[in-house]
Image (cartoon, rainbow, N blue to C red; front, top):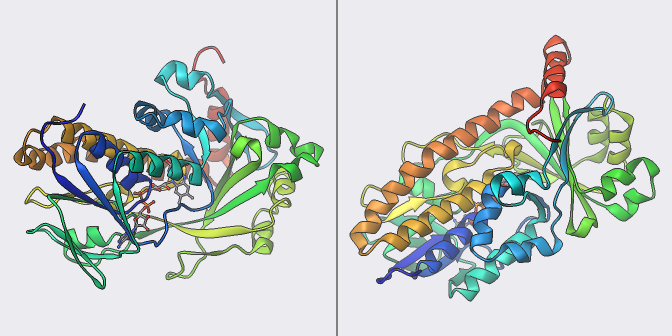
Length: 391
Ligand code: FAD
């Protein structure tokens, strides 16, 4: 249902977070323009996990059927020992997630997710202004300042420009580069046709599942996407990249050397890898506030709560941000109520995203544990862990 009055909203950034907010706010009857630095819309070529807290919102927006077309629904989560590949913990995901949370856990290609959001935003009349880099915010007007271009004014401005956010720096009034977490990740996609030729890897290539290997000094996850044609992997290890390198081509020889003590099946899987990209994993230091005191500006997504990806919740939290903003914009009957709404948005969202960020960081200590008694105790506890009845 649309609100009776409408305002102009500029959202900086057409990532998953900016698009989610655009859809939610346009659904509430407001006029939305997205200002995006990239000359074309798109996402990184990799997979993404869409947990039920996100898929439920996408369902409400009518986007879930599109995502389901070529996504995979994992049957279970298997946490494996790095040493011998044995399963430490097996948890049901399908149908349990739908039974418990009313919505599925999905594995999707990022491009599919991004395109589905772009299509819906376009259908709702959201305008895209591409190839424009925002370099600051005039909070009083309010307007975004754009490199080599005139300012773009609106009633409200939302900064969804990701980890290295010009909007966050404008709000803080100082440089605020992302924080190096000490980890880096290999992002890998392997064709399952290749994997299926190796008897030992057929189960990974054919059974929709969420595989997690816990090792000392790192962990790996792997799952099928794109009708099962591709196996997506994220492998996290200690960061060895120079301070100023955020992503680069991964050196496969170094990667094999790094995992030489891991179990033979995992190493066999790594031998299927033709290329890998390498990303410094960064997160943000908790901000005091996400919004400007004059009430017409707020941040969302990675721009204000970038988290380590270990609970697969970064984009899911950005989608939740969008949904909450949309619900509040819908209820407002005048501009003053939207000023208040941004305060309510922050009160509702900040404690939750802070908890998710802290728990993602804490999960690192569990899944990267060094060999020894503590790790053996972890494995014993995982083996005995019975999260849900009936599996
Ligand atoms: P971004 O995706 O960074 O989008 C920001 C947008 O703003 C971009 O389009 C950018 O071009 C634009 N922009 C930037 N600066 C400017 C500017 N100055 N002017 C104009 N435009 C600008 N999350 C999950 O939910 N599930 C997962 O399984 C998962 N796995 C992950 C695995 C890895 C290895 C990593 C690194 C992250 C993972 N995440 C996952 C986290 C997720 O990718 C992010 O949280 C999410 O993409 C953030 O979306 P965003 O829109 O806030 O920011």
